[in-house]
Length: 132
Image (cartoon, helix red, strand yellow):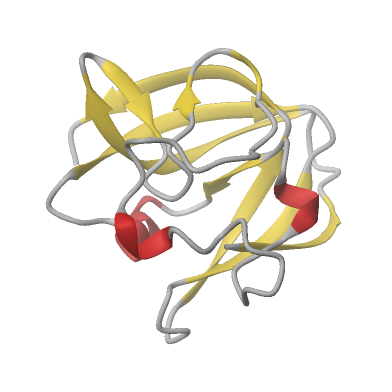
């Protein structure tokens, strides 16, 4: 999943990019299945029904993907190209502005072969699906 590193101090919010699953005009995380919508990021305590099956161990405490600090946070990629780390045939790209307790982070794909910089926050200010 995402490893939080240092506080992000450049601004009070950050706009970046996410891979999303679109179902019934709503946007969901392909990793956890939570719905992305404006407001506080919900605590992730169970994998939602729209999560991609490959990520189902992100909540297992003994998993390499588990990060307890991410339970009420979401991360956005700084570079749109890096959304490909979590892209599949069933995902699209969204532009998301986050705020609230911002941190820098590093995200890694399942195979551990690709990493990318992300900014992590606990509030979604804006989100929109984009063509990419």
